[in-house]
Amino acid sequence: MVKRLFPHFFPRSIRARLITIATLIATMVFTVTSTIALATVPDNLHGLVQTRVELAVRRVASQARAGQLPADLETPSHVHLLQVVSETGEVLATSPDLRGGPRLTPFQPGKPGTMRVTERSLPRIRYEGEEQYLVITMPVQTPDGPVTVFGAAPLTEVNQALTWLYILVFLGTPLVLVIVAATTWAVVGFALRPVERIRTEMAEITGQDLSRRVSVPDTGDEITQLAVTTNRTLDRLERSAETQRRFVADASHELRSPISAMRTQLEFANAYPDETDWPATGARALAAAERLSGIIDELLMLARLDAGAVVHRRVVDMCRMAEEQVRRREGSRVPIILDPCEPAPVNGSPMQLDRLLTNLLDNATRHASSRIDFSVTVEGDEVVVTVTDDGEGIPPQDRERVFERFTRLESARAKEKGGSGLGLPLSREIATAHHGTLTIADYSPGARFVVVLPLYEGDS
Image 1 (cartoon, rainbow, N blue to C red):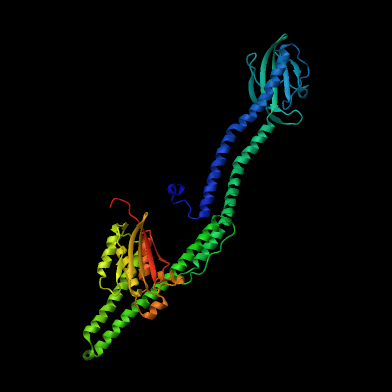
Image 2 (image 1 turned 90 degrees about the vertical axis):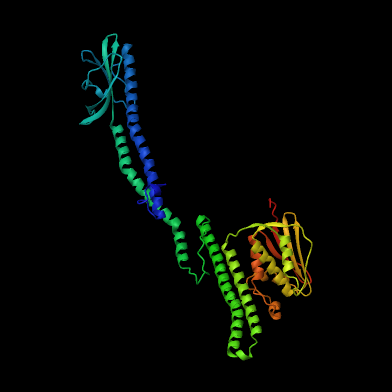
């Protein structure tokens, strides 16, 4: 809010901002308290002195009315001067400090029974010079005639207290604000020291070396959580960078194979045109181009899934899609046996789900010995798709490795059954993007892939 109101004056440094905010808050607090103190303390101090003198004057006035006025008047604490003067100016009674001294007649008294208050400079009693006094007079009617009662108390202590108050307000407040600013500077600097260390260490980390980590302070506060989160982020970045480098290397290797084969065939045909079987050469080049096109399509789809691209989704019947897959594969190397299925609607991308089934059936066709079992069932609120082949199977320790990109098991490489190592990883990415799973179940002999997708229960 402050930055919005004062965009050109608000500092950019966090330390400077906190110092500014703390100083402003302290300034407002001291301003309010100082204003209240200056408005109330002087009146309260003067009121306390006036109350003391007034009580002493009323006590002497009561004695005078009753005709019991002593010659020596007893002065209470903090009231130094008491005196009773007759209408003719005769001193009838006085406090010990005024015995033998002058009459207290600093001003004309008022009506009988009323008090008048003033501040006057009177001669010091024990020392030379003058002193400021608060003086109260009260005319009283006595059996011997009207008299005037005087009472006075020095304001020296009050003035000293007010002087210290003014010193504290006008000199102490700026000093306290400086102390607040300096303390905030030191405390914030100490608190931000780990942040500066983390910033320095982060600045030294480059894309070529993501193995470094920032130091984690043992304070257990938010800075520690920041350092831990930073290291976790660096872990993810390192894994992502390593995966990306491995992905680029594997993609280059996989793309190089069909390109090299096509180039070799074309170079041989160009060198020996009369000895070349052009239809066979064209067929082999077309097969290499198709494989190259398939790898590129799978890479593009993986890139879209990694980027979280939003695709158009609608209700897809997995049973009908499975039946279409079987029709397209009539006459393939091994027969595909589809169990009878009922409508199994899911909400998803038809293109991606079709690719999921295509990859699973292609993988099963490459490894199956005599048949492929295919089923689509609805179990509760899930659609379960299973693809089972009777091939050599997948060892339990390799059932997660096959979902890593460009991973091909040694058995598949030895038999030269083709494949790019992208079909199964792409299939799992598609299942995950549709809030489902793709796993390998225990089955022997062969391998069974199980896809579980959420059942669409809306109005299709």
